[in-house]
Amino acid sequence: MCACIAVICLAIPLLVADDGPGVTVAARLAVPSSAAPSPVDPLPGWAPPELLTAPVDDGRAQAAVDAAQAAASATTELGVAVLDRVTGRTAAGDRGDEPFYTASLSKLVVAVDVLDRRRTEDLAVTDDDLDLLRRALGPSDDAAMNQLWVRFDGPGAAARVGADLGLTGTTAPADPSQWGEMSVPAVDLLRLYDHVLGGMPDEDRLVVVDALSAAPAIAADGFDQAFGLLDPVVDGPGAVGAQAKQGWMCCFSERYYLHSAGVVGPDQRFVVAVLTRVPSGPGWDAARAEVTAVAAAAVRALG
Image (tube, rainbow, N blue to C red; front, side):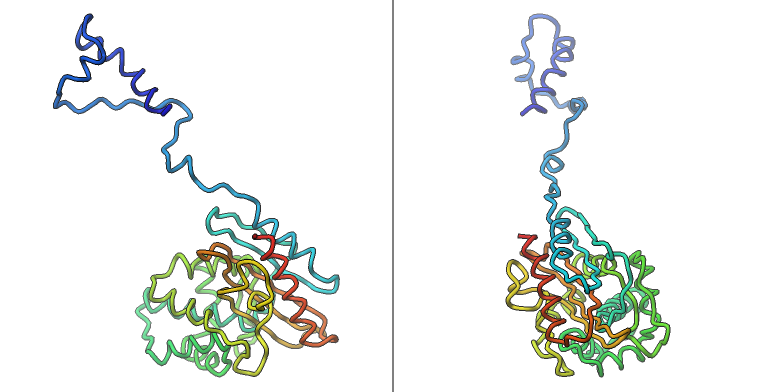
């Protein structure tokens, strides 16, 4: 309403000047004219309606990171980061930029690399190869990953994906045969997932998202992967329908690497990455419970 009033007010001198005294504004507006109207600059501070309704950061990403860090045990080394894909807000914890060994999260990096390269490099990817990708992502099948790693130059995936997406800390393993020792910080996983959801064509995006959505509770190697974002006890948007990649690896300096990173919330709004190094002494059940507590705190804060 304000913008319309401003335009009419600015136009009055021109209308009077063109038609002379005695011609009212109402009469002038009623006269048909084929001439294009002169552009009128909006008043200072005016913005198009779509900009006036742009989403405003409500602080939930930062609140989720704070909640996750508060929930972590003193003995847990936690890398956590959260992206609100609606506002574009990213928040990261104290170790959010610190690279962790990926364990099976490297499977997501390789999947993105293969699917992107089949478009950008015309890489030959067969239906059997796509089946390998699905097996590596959902059941977290190590045998499938081994084949992908050899067939599609897995050791080079970190550098290629990192360059394409502007990742800051994703690096190849020192030993090229050990894909679980690829390194990635939590903040890079946010960009990786955002690319999957918003940067890939539907055909490729669905390969990844559908495979993650179909992840069974028990992985191909017999490991219980229903922890973290995939634990059904997690309250909030992560309780149903979260798409997440889990990672687990033992043992470096008597610590487990246990990770849960994925998409939660209606319309896949939030990306949450929880990377941990936890003491191996208490065992895997305790480690899974720890990651679940951290992920649940983050998801509850997202509301």
